[in-house]
Length: 271
Image (cartoon, rainbow, N blue to C red; front, side, top):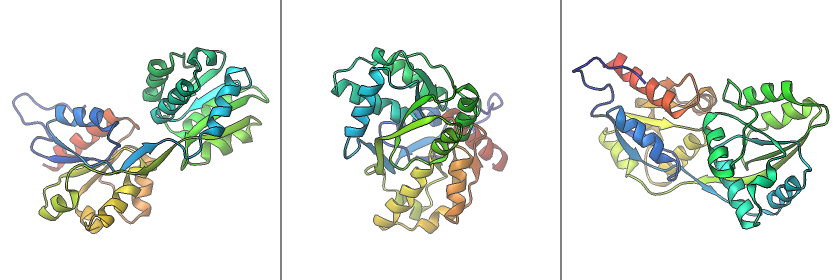
């Protein structure tokens, strides 16, 4: 986190910062923003829903408990929660997956694996994005390794493509769907009042649904041009740029702590 000199106000003090994460994910980022002096405002732009048809996921998990996969690759805490929920629904013990090697995209996902599945994590890349995970896995895979990859319905194809290029047999199944969120503060009204200092974007889909929510709720997406848009990493930033907006903050690592630190640093310099 950005260090503030003793006696000086925190860089985010008095600033209202929007949290666009799903409602169940928002508390962690909100707490970090509070610690940095900001006033977090929750505006869930996305929600996590189970797949419309869980049969493929169920079949893959049952197959995994029978030893038909070598790796379980998890690219988000949402995927971990979805796997845990389906195992419970199927009355399967997560320990039946202990014969698989588990790879996760980052430390937060690894922590979710340990907490919710009780499994050890064999591999987490230094670069906590799909590309980094693909590179690290490619170095660890044996020819013909069988990989189970439960992902979001809208997940990028980069991991599947790069793993299959190594000769691995990849079974990708939809573990959850990301849909437009609802509830939270009156963001259109707050934007019209000029009351928002920054909007945090912890995923590319959060920004996509942010634009959709604002439009549906009578807000003006153009108002975002005058705000600090804080992106959790380069992939989210690319989505913002592609939509014609300018990210003011891009955290060097895709973690909530890095995002808040980069946001605090931005306002410390600009104030």
